[in-house]
Image (cartoon, rainbow, N blue to C red):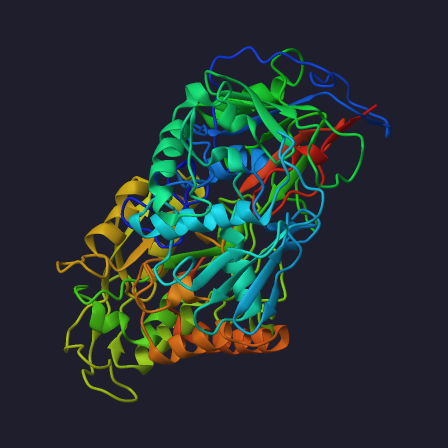
Length: 637
């Protein structure tokens, strides 16, 4: 998933110029002029609270800056396949088949999943819906509701109508989709895949759909559940309805939910939810809030002003600190002195990989230089992650140590990466790498090739005598820490005679150029060498960081178009591993081989949000998947 600050654009795992998977961070927002009325236990006023849980009450939540949900149908086309639609609307109402995020880790959460863990028998996978689960209209959740979704994928995914579609993956990699009972369905996998990968990166995309949605109009039932040929007309109806915000509260279609919430109010971007008393999955406590409201903002400063006000009818129960206002983290602590009285501060990091792509496109005029492994290693040695964290990130952030996300720590990260990775900041080591390979290093001016040839002590294949280390780097504006980090890299590079010329633009500008202008199917000049749009990639909704999306040859998610046959073979071995132990061992082998190749430049992982929650509202540890679970929140007195 592509990551962007303050953006609602698509999160497609195989993005095109108009379909780029991104995450919306919650640390950028501003207030629309609203009167947010307090109810129940909202509208906090006191600085000390007790420990007695209270059942009921309204919690008000601040949406990201300049962002509001705009599409309710969970089978979202690419243009609507966004984190804000998914996490701040759809998943509150309609639960995915398998839920990921458990105690602050991105693992399968069996308790919150609609189905038991899938069973694999050779190529046949069997999915069993948990007993006694119901839609809010009283109908049972059945295996046919899963078949309904899969048939719609079969009919429409390749046309771009499912934003998570990846050619060759679901639904292309399965056949013989059918229900074998009311609670069980089967599909046959085409090809060999690891059960861990198939569950986490394929079945994770499924959201069962109620029988009531199988229609082409208010009074026109259809049968997409049994006939794939009917699905296009059903999608056309639901797609149009899903984009019409005026229907969200009134249409009987969207009232049929299986999640813990029903949308009961929508006005001027404010979404109000009421607890679904027919919600079938277990809750951690009988005491929880019963109303939840999401409030939009236009600037982060306005949200911060509202947060600091703290009391009265406009109180925010759960908001966020802009990074520029974040208190410097105290030594040995994850946070600093909270500037907002009566609130608890909680940094939340997204499950993903924070990086800058390197351009390996055949039309890159500096391709011969960037094809040299030692050049890429020298660049990585010039990224001062610690200084970025302690400087513009105010102490909030985690270093990226390997090519698998290491925040939060998981079993997927190799020992080599856990030990801190291979490339700590070191300009002298970068200088030595260049000098040892035939470059005349000039601090403060441009380093040039003095020994043009192949082999030890020479610049490398395709590099002419006098070739200069002149690079271009494009970056997205609007994110203070990113702009500061880019200027720091430019300065560090000048210490070894690398001249980096910067160009800036919006997120759409930068990713549009990287993918649309310089993508694998474009036959034109590609005059950039490095890019940075903020944070890189989120693994949601494909939760295993197996590398096929980011580093596999021909993957659209492989922005820099890095290609290596050995790398592809190691990735293939990982996703075909027969059991968990083999899966982890092959994954470690792949990571440790690829890390010294430096296919991308790693940068720190910044917080997705610096959550502020009022101290009489208990919200627990927030998920790195960024999925909200306000049904678990409760006030205390």
